[in-house]
Image 1 (cartoon, rainbow, N blue to C red):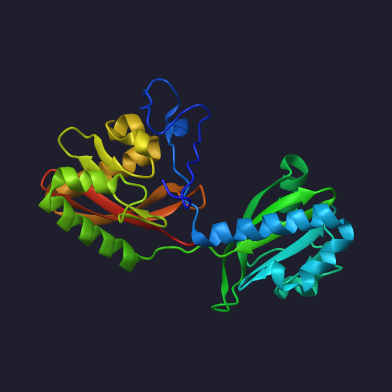
Image 2: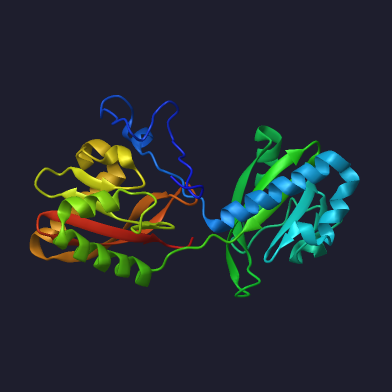
Amino acid sequence: MNNKIKESLFIAGLTLSVPVAADAVNKEQQMLATHIETHEELRAKKLLNSAVEHLVKNGATAVKDFNNKEEFIDNELYVFTLTVDGKFLSSGGSSLVLVGDTVLDTFDMYGKYFFREMVQKAKRDGGGDVEYHWNNPIDRVASPKRTLFKRVGDIIVAVGYYPVRANAFQAKSLLDKATVELKENVKQALFKFNNLDGQYVDGDLYIFVVDTDSKKYLAHAISRSFVGQTYEDALDDSGEAAISKMLDVVKDKSEGEIDYIWINPITNRKETKHTYFRLVDHYLLGVGFYKPN
C-alpha cells in the first residue's frame, strides 16, 4: 500500500483482513471504511505540522510569521491561527481581514458556526477537523472546505483545503470501464476492483460488485470486510435498502441509478451518494459519486 493510503477503521481492534460476524457487532458499527488521503490532504497536513513545529519552537509571538512568510504558504494553502477564546490571530490567506476579531459568531453561507466547532474540538481533543463552506480562490465561489487543526497551548493552528470530488461523468466513465473488464475476465476484474492502489479506486470513486444469486459482496475496495458477506449481513438498514432497490431494478432492466446515504472515504462522513449500477451477467456492478452538501 502506498503512502497516499491510510487505513482508518471505525471499530477499534478490527482489521480489514478479518471478516466480521454479523451477530458480533451492531450493523451500524460494522461499516468499516478505508480512509483515502488525497494529495490535497497530505499537503495540508505537511503544512500544518510545519506550522505547529515553528510555533512550539519559537513561542506564541511566532504567529505573526504565518501572515507573510512564504514557507507557510503552499499555493492555495495557508496557515491561520486563533486563540481558544476565539480571537483571530493571523492568516496567510484571505482570512487575514479577520485578524484581531473574535470570530465565534462568524458563520458560513449555510449558517454553520464553524469556528465554534473548531474551538470546542480543540479544547476537548487537542485537534481535529471541521467542514464548512468558504470562498474558493480558484473558482471564486463558496465551496466545501475541510480544515485540519491542532492546539498549541492556547493557540489553535489550522490549515484548510478544498477536497476534490468526483462528478457524474467520472462515475459513469469508471462504470463503463469496469463493465468491459468484468465481461473480459471476472476473476481478474474482481481482483482489480478490490485493489485499493489500483486503477478502479480514484479519490472517492470505487467499484462494488454483488452476486445477484448469492447476494454476497464480491468486491468493495473501501470496505473490504464486506467481501464474502451477504449485503443483509454487511449493511445497516439504509444500506441494505439501497442494495435491495438496485437488485429490484435490475430484475426488469439492465441498469439504473439511485441516491442514498453512504460513508465518503475521503471525508470519513456519511454523505448523499448518487450511484450508477448495471447488471453484467449475474453481477450487480456499481459506482457512485458524492454530492456536495
